[in-house]
Length: 390
Image (cartoon, rainbow, N blue to C red; front, top):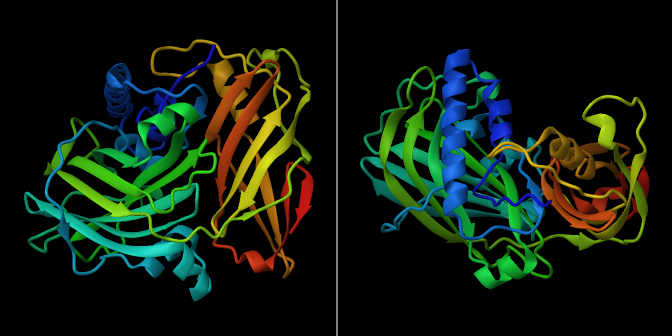
């Protein structure tokens, strides 16, 4: 059995995991999860396009209250005179390091597209990406210059606020259907400057099954509705309205293709693992079908020698068996060795696509790095114990 999901249908059990980390009462958390589950099921019933593969979506803490997708009406678009968060500031927030200007000039762009409604302006400030991955920072500012009230940061600085949202890239529908295209990603709010009148929304998207297509040169459209504060009781509406922003993904793709055909090892999995009746499980062997690396991410397609036999979970949820199997098939760990002797480690966190094919599974994942890499300083990349020299 194949489980079908789309980018607009995040897994409800992942919402529950995220909500469990919030500083709300158990009753408040339960109410939030119930509302999210009901809305997700309704959204799935209305969605006319589903993908023929099994997908996992990794969401950070605040995404539990900010990632429901709905259809919104388009409004007029205004063009801001300048970004509230600069490209270097966005890179510092996402990655922490200060890469060479030449790298930033290739993979990132300021945007500066904005729309005002009901006394609030939403602006797309900056983007950074490659052929399969993109990250965008939006600012949400009150036009009267006063800060949003009543928002207390959670652990780690994330904010318990969220839009209803829908973010699309203009790939033709026929291409999406033919290639089974889908996306995984994350969504969260933070406050870049607590003293000003704005808060920031970060959206990341990793697209799989693109084939020879690329995000570069496409148009992204982001639609938002009603900014809400989540906590005890019902959500509080901070700003009511519908905002729609469209902008080109006009950065350069700095990815390089790497040799393929190598064997590597994934995590372990066994049918009895769910029942915990066995202590040892056979490792999953895989073979690299496609591999590329950019300054921000590694893109990997591979064939695993594990049958992807899916089971049925509750409506809107993934069964424990399927969750463990997905974690195993997409559990890729990467170590990037630099010429200065340091190592950058990364893993997929369960995001990607799995397509069943008899006794094997075809998998695809994008693994984002914790810092921007200068590819000229990368000596080798180790994937599941197999090292590939650059």
